[in-house]
Image 1 (tube, rainbow, N blue to C red):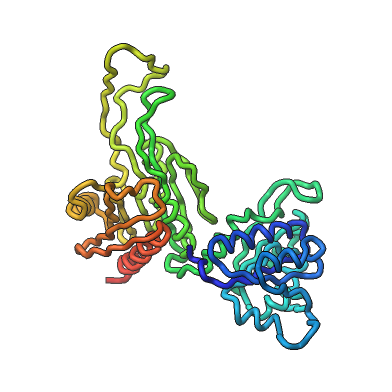
Image 2: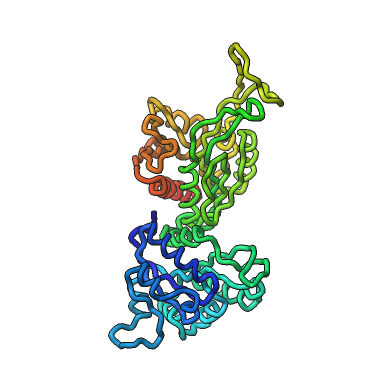
Length: 399
Protein backbone atom coordinates (compact mmCIF):
# COMPACT_ATOMS: atom_id res chain seq x y z
CA UNK A 1 0.00 0.00 0.00
CA UNK A 2 1.41 3.33 -1.10
CA UNK A 3 0.51 5.09 2.15
CA UNK A 4 2.44 2.65 4.34
CA UNK A 5 5.03 4.52 6.39
CA UNK A 6 3.65 7.96 5.46
CA UNK A 7 2.86 10.66 8.02
CA UNK A 8 -0.65 12.05 7.76
CA UNK A 9 -2.11 15.02 9.62
CA UNK A 10 -5.87 14.45 9.89
CA UNK A 11 -7.97 17.60 10.25
CA UNK A 12 -11.44 17.22 11.79
CA UNK A 13 -13.97 20.05 11.75
CA UNK A 14 -17.40 20.76 13.23
CA UNK A 15 -19.67 18.52 11.15
CA UNK A 16 -22.06 15.84 12.34
CA UNK A 17 -19.87 13.55 10.20
CA UNK A 18 -16.95 14.18 12.59
CA UNK A 19 -17.47 10.74 14.10
CA UNK A 20 -16.43 9.28 10.74
CA UNK A 21 -13.09 11.02 11.23
CA UNK A 22 -12.31 8.23 13.69
CA UNK A 23 -13.07 5.65 10.99
CA UNK A 24 -10.77 7.49 8.58
CA UNK A 25 -8.06 7.58 11.25
CA UNK A 26 -8.32 3.85 11.91
CA UNK A 27 -8.30 2.96 8.21
CA UNK A 28 -5.20 5.10 7.66
CA UNK A 29 -3.49 3.29 10.53
CA UNK A 30 -4.65 -0.08 9.20
CA UNK A 31 -2.93 0.70 5.90
CA UNK A 32 0.31 1.57 7.68
CA UNK A 33 0.19 5.37 8.03
CA UNK A 34 1.23 7.30 11.12
CA UNK A 35 -1.47 9.83 12.07
CA UNK A 36 -1.63 13.02 14.12
CA UNK A 37 -4.84 15.03 14.53
CA UNK A 38 -5.78 18.70 14.42
CA UNK A 39 -9.36 19.54 15.41
CA UNK A 40 -11.46 22.69 15.61
CA UNK A 41 -13.39 23.79 18.70
CA UNK A 42 -16.61 22.92 16.91
CA UNK A 43 -15.18 19.53 16.00
CA UNK A 44 -14.61 18.76 19.69
CA UNK A 45 -18.35 19.23 20.28
CA UNK A 46 -18.91 16.11 18.18
CA UNK A 47 -15.91 13.96 19.12
CA UNK A 48 -13.76 13.89 22.23
CA UNK A 49 -10.10 14.87 22.25
CA UNK A 50 -9.34 11.96 24.60
CA UNK A 51 -10.63 9.46 22.04
CA UNK A 52 -8.30 10.82 19.35
CA UNK A 53 -5.30 10.88 21.67
CA UNK A 54 -5.97 7.31 22.78
CA UNK A 55 -6.14 6.10 19.18
CA UNK A 56 -3.09 7.97 17.88
CA UNK A 57 -0.93 7.93 20.99
CA UNK A 58 -0.18 11.58 20.19
CA UNK A 59 -1.37 14.92 21.60
CA UNK A 60 -4.19 16.49 19.59
CA UNK A 61 -3.68 20.02 18.22
CA UNK A 62 -6.87 21.74 19.39
CA UNK A 63 -5.86 25.28 20.43
CA UNK A 64 -4.63 28.14 18.27
CA UNK A 65 -3.25 29.80 21.41
CA UNK A 66 -1.29 27.03 23.17
CA UNK A 67 -1.19 26.54 26.91
CA UNK A 68 2.62 26.72 26.71
CA UNK A 69 4.97 28.17 24.12
CA UNK A 70 7.37 25.25 23.89
CA UNK A 71 6.18 24.16 20.42
CA UNK A 72 4.61 26.03 17.51
CA UNK A 73 2.23 23.21 16.62
CA UNK A 74 0.90 24.34 13.23
CA UNK A 75 4.39 24.72 11.77
CA UNK A 76 5.82 21.60 13.43
CA UNK A 77 2.90 19.50 12.15
CA UNK A 78 3.42 20.84 8.63
CA UNK A 79 7.14 19.94 8.81
CA UNK A 80 6.32 16.51 10.22
CA UNK A 81 3.52 15.51 7.89
CA UNK A 82 3.66 14.17 4.33
CA UNK A 83 -0.03 14.95 3.77
CA UNK A 84 -2.84 17.01 5.27
CA UNK A 85 -6.22 15.28 5.01
CA UNK A 86 -9.29 17.19 6.23
CA UNK A 87 -12.27 14.89 6.76
CA UNK A 88 -14.87 16.09 7.34
CA UNK A 89 -14.40 19.65 6.04
CA UNK A 90 -17.24 22.09 6.70
CA UNK A 91 -18.22 24.94 4.38
CA UNK A 92 -16.84 27.34 7.00
CA UNK A 93 -13.40 25.68 7.06
CA UNK A 94 -13.29 25.43 3.26
CA UNK A 95 -14.06 29.17 3.00
CA UNK A 96 -11.34 30.02 5.53
CA UNK A 97 -8.69 27.93 3.79
CA UNK A 98 -9.54 29.39 0.37
CA UNK A 99 -9.15 32.92 1.80
CA UNK A 100 -6.02 32.19 3.85
CA UNK A 101 -7.73 32.72 7.21
CA UNK A 102 -5.92 30.89 10.01
CA UNK A 103 -8.01 31.20 13.17
CA UNK A 104 -8.56 27.49 13.94
CA UNK A 105 -6.05 24.66 14.38
CA UNK A 106 -7.17 23.10 11.07
CA UNK A 107 -7.06 26.28 8.98
CA UNK A 108 -3.69 27.19 10.55
CA UNK A 109 -2.19 23.84 9.57
CA UNK A 110 -3.76 24.16 6.11
CA UNK A 111 -2.05 27.52 5.57
CA UNK A 112 1.29 25.93 6.46
CA UNK A 113 0.80 22.88 4.23
CA UNK A 114 -0.48 24.90 1.26
CA UNK A 115 -2.28 21.92 -0.26
CA UNK A 116 -3.71 18.54 0.66
CA UNK A 117 -6.98 16.63 0.51
CA UNK A 118 -10.40 17.94 1.52
CA UNK A 119 -13.51 15.81 2.01
CA UNK A 120 -16.52 18.18 2.31
CA UNK A 121 -19.54 17.34 4.46
CA UNK A 122 -22.53 19.68 4.82
CA UNK A 123 -26.15 20.33 3.92
CA UNK A 124 -26.86 20.08 0.19
CA UNK A 125 -27.87 23.74 -0.03
CA UNK A 126 -24.61 24.83 1.55
CA UNK A 127 -22.62 22.55 -0.74
CA UNK A 128 -24.40 23.68 -3.91
CA UNK A 129 -24.13 27.35 -2.96
CA UNK A 130 -22.06 29.13 -5.65
CA UNK A 131 -19.75 30.56 -2.98
CA UNK A 132 -18.84 27.07 -1.69
CA UNK A 133 -18.37 25.81 -5.24
CA UNK A 134 -16.15 28.78 -6.06
CA UNK A 135 -14.07 28.16 -2.94
CA UNK A 136 -13.63 24.49 -3.88
CA UNK A 137 -12.64 25.36 -7.45
CA UNK A 138 -10.09 27.84 -6.12
CA UNK A 139 -8.59 25.20 -3.86
CA UNK A 140 -8.38 22.73 -6.75
CA UNK A 141 -6.46 25.31 -8.78
CA UNK A 142 -4.07 25.70 -5.85
CA UNK A 143 -3.30 21.98 -5.77
CA UNK A 144 -5.89 20.65 -3.33
CA UNK A 145 -7.65 17.35 -4.03
CA UNK A 146 -11.39 17.38 -3.31
CA UNK A 147 -13.09 14.08 -2.52
CA UNK A 148 -16.60 14.79 -3.73
CA UNK A 149 -19.38 14.20 -1.18
CA UNK A 150 -22.04 11.60 -1.79
CA UNK A 151 -25.77 11.99 -2.29
CA UNK A 152 -28.39 10.64 0.05
CA UNK A 153 -30.14 11.20 3.36
CA UNK A 154 -28.54 14.05 5.31
CA UNK A 155 -28.45 14.69 9.06
CA UNK A 156 -30.95 17.55 8.75
CA UNK A 157 -33.49 15.24 7.17
CA UNK A 158 -33.03 16.54 3.63
CA UNK A 159 -31.94 14.37 0.73
CA UNK A 160 -29.23 15.64 -1.59
CA UNK A 161 -25.50 15.95 -2.22
CA UNK A 162 -23.39 16.79 0.80
CA UNK A 163 -22.86 13.68 2.89
CA UNK A 164 -19.24 12.75 3.60
CA UNK A 165 -17.71 10.44 0.99
CA UNK A 166 -17.20 6.80 1.90
CA UNK A 167 -14.26 6.19 4.22
CA UNK A 168 -12.70 3.81 1.67
CA UNK A 169 -12.74 6.52 -1.01
CA UNK A 170 -11.23 9.14 1.31
CA UNK A 171 -8.37 6.85 2.32
CA UNK A 172 -7.77 5.73 -1.27
CA UNK A 173 -7.56 9.40 -2.25
CA UNK A 174 -4.83 9.70 0.37
CA UNK A 175 -3.03 6.73 -1.17
CA UNK A 176 -3.33 8.27 -4.65
CA UNK A 177 -1.57 11.38 -3.35
CA UNK A 178 1.72 9.49 -3.24
CA UNK A 179 1.70 7.96 -6.72
CA UNK A 180 3.77 9.65 -9.45
CA UNK A 181 1.35 11.26 -11.91
CA UNK A 182 2.79 9.43 -14.91
CA UNK A 183 -0.60 8.98 -16.62
CA UNK A 184 -2.17 12.36 -15.94
CA UNK A 185 -4.57 13.34 -18.72
CA UNK A 186 -4.61 9.83 -20.23
CA UNK A 187 -7.56 7.48 -20.59
CA UNK A 188 -6.79 3.92 -19.51
CA UNK A 189 -9.22 1.07 -20.19
CA UNK A 190 -8.70 -2.09 -18.13
CA UNK A 191 -10.57 -5.39 -18.26
CA UNK A 192 -10.76 -7.56 -15.15
CA UNK A 193 -12.40 -10.62 -13.68
CA UNK A 194 -13.91 -13.69 -15.30
CA UNK A 195 -16.55 -13.98 -18.00
CA UNK A 196 -19.46 -16.44 -17.92
CA UNK A 197 -20.88 -18.42 -20.84
CA UNK A 198 -24.24 -19.90 -19.94
CA UNK A 199 -25.23 -23.49 -20.65
CA UNK A 200 -28.72 -22.99 -19.24
CA UNK A 201 -30.27 -20.39 -16.88
CA UNK A 202 -28.41 -21.75 -13.83
CA UNK A 203 -25.15 -23.22 -15.19
CA UNK A 204 -22.24 -21.56 -16.91
CA UNK A 205 -18.63 -22.04 -18.03
CA UNK A 206 -16.17 -19.77 -16.25
CA UNK A 207 -12.78 -19.75 -14.51
CA UNK A 208 -11.37 -18.93 -11.05
CA UNK A 209 -10.15 -15.39 -11.78
CA UNK A 210 -10.79 -13.09 -8.79
CA UNK A 211 -10.21 -9.85 -10.71
CA UNK A 212 -7.67 -8.67 -8.12
CA UNK A 213 -4.92 -7.91 -10.65
CA UNK A 214 -7.21 -5.86 -12.88
CA UNK A 215 -8.64 -3.95 -9.94
CA UNK A 216 -5.13 -3.27 -8.62
CA UNK A 217 -4.17 -1.91 -12.04
CA UNK A 218 -7.27 0.29 -12.07
CA UNK A 219 -6.49 1.68 -8.63
CA UNK A 220 -2.84 2.44 -9.42
CA UNK A 221 -3.69 3.95 -12.83
CA UNK A 222 -6.19 6.27 -11.14
CA UNK A 223 -3.54 7.12 -8.55
CA UNK A 224 -1.19 8.02 -11.40
CA UNK A 225 -3.72 10.55 -12.63
CA UNK A 226 -5.47 8.65 -15.42
CA UNK A 227 -9.14 8.60 -16.30
CA UNK A 228 -9.81 4.91 -15.72
CA UNK A 229 -12.56 2.74 -17.18
CA UNK A 230 -12.75 -0.72 -15.62
CA UNK A 231 -14.67 -3.29 -17.66
CA UNK A 232 -15.34 -5.98 -15.10
CA UNK A 233 -16.65 -9.49 -15.22
CA UNK A 234 -18.26 -11.00 -12.14
CA UNK A 235 -16.31 -10.32 -8.95
CA UNK A 236 -16.95 -9.49 -5.30
CA UNK A 237 -14.52 -6.54 -5.40
CA UNK A 238 -15.52 -2.90 -4.99
CA UNK A 239 -14.37 -0.47 -7.68
CA UNK A 240 -11.45 1.74 -6.60
CA UNK A 241 -11.91 5.46 -5.96
CA UNK A 242 -12.37 7.62 -9.06
CA UNK A 243 -12.73 4.61 -11.37
CA UNK A 244 -15.72 4.17 -13.70
CA UNK A 245 -16.79 0.54 -13.73
CA UNK A 246 -18.75 -1.13 -16.52
CA UNK A 247 -20.11 -4.49 -15.39
CA UNK A 248 -20.36 -7.25 -17.99
CA UNK A 249 -20.95 -10.97 -17.87
CA UNK A 250 -20.35 -12.66 -21.21
CA UNK A 251 -17.49 -12.44 -23.69
CA UNK A 252 -19.77 -10.70 -26.20
CA UNK A 253 -20.67 -8.03 -23.62
CA UNK A 254 -17.00 -7.52 -22.79
CA UNK A 255 -16.12 -7.26 -26.49
CA UNK A 256 -18.75 -4.59 -27.12
CA UNK A 257 -17.73 -2.51 -24.10
CA UNK A 258 -14.00 -2.87 -24.84
CA UNK A 259 -14.26 -1.84 -28.50
CA UNK A 260 -16.42 1.16 -27.62
CA UNK A 261 -14.14 2.47 -24.84
CA UNK A 262 -10.94 1.77 -26.77
CA UNK A 263 -11.92 4.28 -29.44
CA UNK A 264 -10.99 7.18 -27.14
CA UNK A 265 -8.37 5.40 -25.01
CA UNK A 266 -4.64 5.98 -24.78
CA UNK A 267 -3.99 2.64 -23.07
CA UNK A 268 -5.83 -0.70 -23.08
CA UNK A 269 -4.87 -3.41 -20.57
CA UNK A 270 -6.46 -6.84 -20.89
CA UNK A 271 -6.23 -8.32 -17.40
CA UNK A 272 -9.56 -10.17 -17.59
CA UNK A 273 -9.74 -13.95 -17.87
CA UNK A 274 -11.94 -14.00 -20.97
CA UNK A 275 -13.47 -17.34 -21.89
CA UNK A 276 -12.26 -19.02 -25.09
CA UNK A 277 -15.36 -21.15 -25.69
CA UNK A 278 -19.13 -20.85 -25.42
CA UNK A 279 -21.88 -23.47 -25.88
CA UNK A 280 -23.13 -23.85 -29.45
CA UNK A 281 -26.64 -23.95 -28.02
CA UNK A 282 -27.93 -22.49 -24.76
CA UNK A 283 -30.94 -24.14 -23.22
CA UNK A 284 -33.74 -21.74 -22.26
CA UNK A 285 -34.78 -24.16 -19.49
CA UNK A 286 -32.78 -25.80 -16.73
CA UNK A 287 -31.27 -29.04 -18.01
CA UNK A 288 -32.56 -31.90 -15.84
CA UNK A 289 -30.29 -34.62 -14.54
CA UNK A 290 -30.32 -37.80 -16.58
CA UNK A 291 -28.82 -41.27 -16.22
CA UNK A 292 -26.32 -40.97 -19.07
CA UNK A 293 -23.61 -38.51 -20.05
CA UNK A 294 -24.30 -34.89 -20.93
CA UNK A 295 -22.44 -33.73 -24.02
CA UNK A 296 -22.06 -30.00 -24.64
CA UNK A 297 -20.72 -28.76 -27.96
CA UNK A 298 -18.58 -25.65 -27.75
CA UNK A 299 -17.52 -22.99 -30.25
CA UNK A 300 -14.85 -20.30 -30.10
CA UNK A 301 -15.67 -16.92 -28.62
CA UNK A 302 -14.42 -13.68 -30.19
CA UNK A 303 -10.74 -12.95 -29.44
CA UNK A 304 -11.25 -9.54 -27.81
CA UNK A 305 -7.56 -8.73 -27.37
CA UNK A 306 -6.77 -9.64 -30.99
CA UNK A 307 -9.59 -7.36 -32.18
CA UNK A 308 -8.21 -4.52 -30.05
CA UNK A 309 -4.72 -5.11 -31.45
CA UNK A 310 -6.08 -4.92 -34.99
CA UNK A 311 -7.83 -1.61 -34.27
CA UNK A 312 -4.85 -0.02 -32.50
CA UNK A 313 -3.89 3.36 -33.89
CA UNK A 314 -0.55 5.13 -33.69
CA UNK A 315 0.01 6.46 -30.18
CA UNK A 316 -2.20 3.86 -28.49
CA UNK A 317 -0.65 1.24 -26.21
CA UNK A 318 -2.13 -2.24 -25.79
CA UNK A 319 -1.08 -4.61 -23.00
CA UNK A 320 -2.03 -8.26 -22.67
CA UNK A 321 -1.66 -10.94 -20.00
CA UNK A 322 -0.52 -14.52 -20.52
CA UNK A 323 -1.30 -17.04 -17.80
CA UNK A 324 0.57 -20.18 -18.79
CA UNK A 325 1.27 -23.63 -17.39
CA UNK A 326 4.40 -24.26 -19.51
CA UNK A 327 6.91 -22.46 -21.75
CA UNK A 328 5.94 -19.21 -20.08
CA UNK A 329 8.11 -16.65 -21.86
CA UNK A 330 8.07 -18.43 -25.21
CA UNK A 331 4.27 -18.53 -25.30
CA UNK A 332 3.99 -14.97 -24.04
CA UNK A 333 6.27 -13.63 -26.80
CA UNK A 334 4.25 -15.48 -29.45
CA UNK A 335 1.03 -13.97 -28.10
CA UNK A 336 2.56 -10.48 -28.04
CA UNK A 337 3.49 -10.69 -31.72
CA UNK A 338 0.34 -12.47 -32.89
CA UNK A 339 -2.01 -9.96 -31.28
CA UNK A 340 -0.02 -6.80 -32.08
CA UNK A 341 0.65 -5.88 -28.46
CA UNK A 342 3.13 -3.38 -27.04
CA UNK A 343 3.67 -5.26 -23.77
CA UNK A 344 2.61 -8.58 -22.34
CA UNK A 345 2.59 -9.63 -18.68
CA UNK A 346 3.35 -13.32 -18.22
CA UNK A 347 2.68 -15.33 -15.10
CA UNK A 348 2.64 -19.00 -14.24
CA UNK A 349 -0.66 -20.63 -13.29
CA UNK A 350 1.37 -23.19 -11.32
CA UNK A 351 2.30 -20.45 -8.82
CA UNK A 352 -1.34 -19.94 -7.82
CA UNK A 353 -2.08 -16.59 -9.45
CA UNK A 354 -5.86 -16.85 -9.11
CA UNK A 355 -7.23 -15.23 -5.97
CA UNK A 356 -3.87 -14.48 -4.37
CA UNK A 357 -2.93 -10.99 -3.19
CA UNK A 358 0.71 -11.66 -4.12
CA UNK A 359 2.10 -12.38 -7.55
CA UNK A 360 5.24 -12.73 -9.64
CA UNK A 361 5.23 -11.69 -13.29
CA UNK A 362 7.48 -11.11 -16.28
CA UNK A 363 6.82 -7.93 -18.27
CA UNK A 364 7.85 -8.55 -21.86
CA UNK A 365 8.37 -5.75 -24.40
CA UNK A 366 8.28 -5.70 -28.20
CA UNK A 367 12.04 -5.84 -28.54
CA UNK A 368 12.18 -8.92 -26.32
CA UNK A 369 13.31 -7.22 -23.11
CA UNK A 370 12.01 -8.91 -19.95
CA UNK A 371 11.46 -7.34 -16.53
CA UNK A 372 10.73 -9.67 -13.62
CA UNK A 373 8.84 -8.21 -10.66
CA UNK A 374 7.02 -9.60 -7.64
CA UNK A 375 5.14 -8.47 -4.55
CA UNK A 376 1.59 -7.48 -3.77
CA UNK A 377 -0.65 -7.05 -6.79
CA UNK A 378 -0.69 -3.28 -6.20
CA UNK A 379 3.12 -3.20 -6.15
CA UNK A 380 3.28 -5.25 -9.32
CA UNK A 381 0.58 -3.08 -10.91
CA UNK A 382 2.74 -0.02 -10.26
CA UNK A 383 5.71 -1.59 -12.03
CA UNK A 384 3.54 -2.59 -14.99
CA UNK A 385 2.10 0.92 -15.29
CA UNK A 386 5.52 2.57 -15.03
CA UNK A 387 6.53 0.46 -18.02
CA UNK A 388 3.28 1.39 -19.79
CA UNK A 389 4.03 5.09 -19.21
CA UNK A 390 7.48 4.63 -20.78
CA UNK A 391 6.06 2.91 -23.85
CA UNK A 392 3.29 5.50 -24.13
CA UNK A 393 5.79 8.34 -24.00
CA UNK A 394 7.79 6.68 -26.76
CA UNK A 395 4.68 6.05 -28.85
CA UNK A 396 3.66 9.71 -28.61
CA UNK A 397 7.12 11.15 -29.33
CA UNK A 398 7.59 12.62 -32.84
CA UNK A 399 9.64 10.39 -35.11
